[in-house]
Image (cartoon, rainbow, N blue to C red; front, top):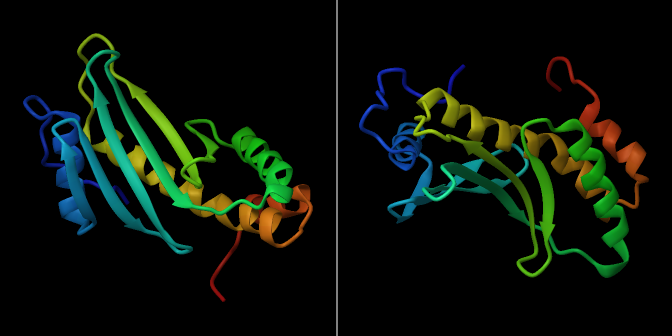
Length: 167
């Protein structure tokens, strides 16, 4: 199922306008921070994610950041970074990082639209969906590695295992 409506046309719409339409369609809380930036709250199974998209004319890139707060005890730093590396090995379209100053775990992705290309609503919806899905997939593994004293290799099995059915 696509996150967007297919009747949006992109010929005269900038990427942030498309994101705003998607946010309205899904009833996500959002704030148009600037003409070239929007911040949204997207509800996941594990938590609500802060999703920000920003358009940069200079390098023709639509940047996405999906983040959530994570206090990192100093003694757990190595475990988190090992878990981030393991998760990034499984992510092809974006990557995780930890922003220590803000205490945020961040998934980020950039859609390069060089040569005056135009992003489609489906592309932007897929970016958002991929970011939230990756965050949902790896959130339990990060929690186990940092707070559960679970070895990273074992914690990553939670993210990699496929579940069938519902409990």
